[in-house]
Image (cartoon, rainbow, N blue to C red; front, top):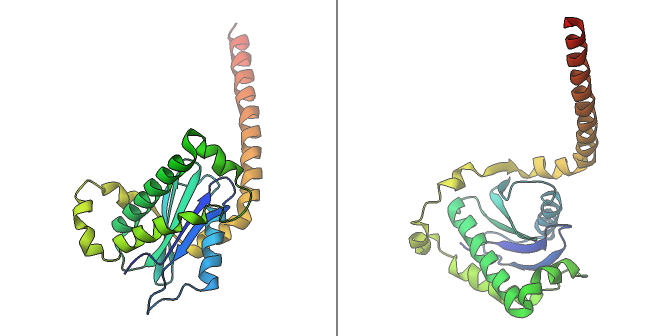
Length: 202
């Protein structure tokens, strides 16, 4: 079973740059699924790990960030985790190589300057070829011979946890600023107490 949905977006604001889907007899990529993918991309751009898996019912979203791009794919729950991340790695390699071929050393600037959604939709055939390569996980076993033990440590979250957290990001930011302010006050207070102790000794 191939990856069902793949999206590439700009990391800074989750602007979708290219996307492709592969419905199967047992799974239809609905509008709701596509909306969930977009919401996840927006939620995952604020200080998250470079790799993460997000459970959504009997499917799993896999997320990866590289350079100023982020990559998301959806698979059935039975699809091997290692294979899903290997697929994202190969999609990232192929897309970034195509960007270099098209724009040379300025490709990062071209991504940052993209003004409309799906501006690189002409890269869709590249992703579709990768999807076909990963249709049958058993045919990709040779690619898994290298050490991929790090996959086991990748954070695994539930989709509701990620999407609900997006509403709290502003609150987290304000709390973080408050803590930094209090930390500065604490440092000054500690220095003051140290000087007072020394004066009392003298």
